[in-house]
Image 1: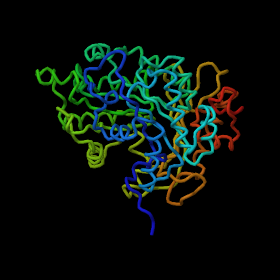
Image 2: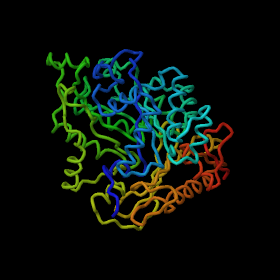
Image 3: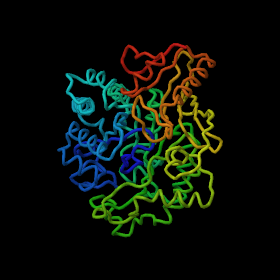
Image 4: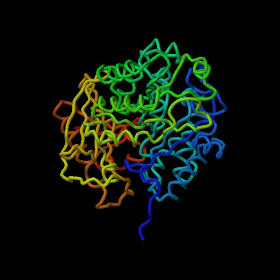
Length: 456
């Protein structure tokens, strides 16, 4: 009898996302108005599921990773392709020695043995049973300097999520955010030039905004060359116990959006999202005991997508079009695939978004290619991802779409485009656990041990 996978959507996009929580630490700028000041990692509550799991491991990263690996295996999920996510505050504000030790312990747990230093742990992970194919770090836009970026490249990070919330300086002042829109612009540019995939956290209904302003800001995120993130998490503002917003709510100075307002707002945002961007999440998982006011439904996305399908609306954002969700919903899928190209300008460079799609627009894989203005700078592959339920390394499954050469086809296309543009080399920001894959395709690790490269 075939094993039944519990919570199949966990690995439906091709990797197993494994979150590791940082210990509680106050932000150096103070507290944002919407953020609870409780004995928990920043922006979380003491009873958030991820916090409870981390507390049970005394916030030790090694123990947290081992516990999550056991949980994945218990649910029947493959664990050979892990996307590691470090969450729970501004990681880059912790002491540098702590950062290196934290990341090393994560790799050690994946490797099943302790290494003498981070470089040794990364090298071991290239061929480990549980490979880190992507590493995500969350940070504030003002804690993302050139030296910070050098360090996170050294960690093996491939994705950075910025707490943007709103792109409005007046709102930032109202909520005590502690930075400006300029910091968002600068961080986005530096990260894209370094090859990172970039995610924004945005907060509809933040104090000082309204639905009209939320939509105006969302449109600007994709119309202005200064922004254009690859991913977005939509976290509507809620009133949490222990947050400064609590007293404004009781004083009737702040009222969170209703469920109906948020649903309509999110539908508009999904319609406005270009095909190169993925809406990662909608809603945060806040334990009811800590929610003073705001939406309680954490499964709101499911209801919204049902409305979209009933209205037969055209949605281009990535997650809505992924093959894994089409298979989950038992939709008939045309397996004839072609490569579609979308070109746009962002952060001083040219972005080329390649996607393996069928005629209905269902997405099987994607590649993000970036050109800087200076042709001497190598072409940069910021992401290569084949979608569909995760398949173990070295295995094939006729009912699934991983390991069937789509990644190679997308990469071949990127190389061809780069060659024709006059680039002499192409480099990839590769997760440590994917380096072996690129080596088989003629790529080599650069002399700094950061990117994999190939002469064209």
